[in-house]
Length: 141
Image 1 (tube, rainbow, N blue to C red):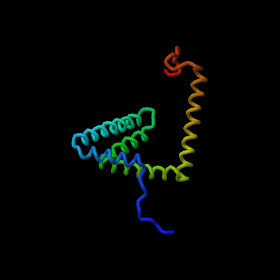
Image 2 (image 1 turned 60 degrees about the horizontal axis):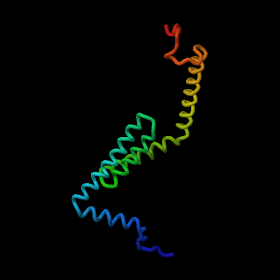
Image 3 (image 1 turned 45 degrees about the vertical axis):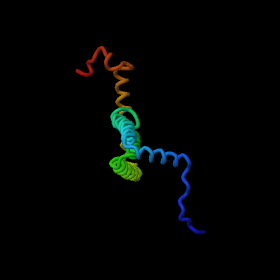
Image 4 (image 1 turned 180 degrees about the horizontal axis):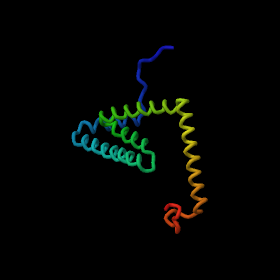
């Protein structure tokens, strides 16, 4: 079976986008506006990912998607995205290491048991009363 050196034909949508983007690149004003729009959208998603690192939400996913959007137009974002992918691959390999998985399982189980014991102790002492509604805080003094 012979290997063909010809490129496979791109889908029509992909060719249409490349023609559209080439037309934008020829006009400096449109090119700058396009890049500014890509920067605004990518930076917004990236900042949203950074915010989600300290608030509930998929922060890492937001950061990676923001970098991917920025990487469509900016070389520095392509480099940052490559470093992020490399770091994610290293983290994945570490996470699947059997010894570390066993250690993390033991630490997680121990933490869950201690948290359950703390909740049980609180309920045994105060019942179903939230801490700011305790009328006799003699336990704390």
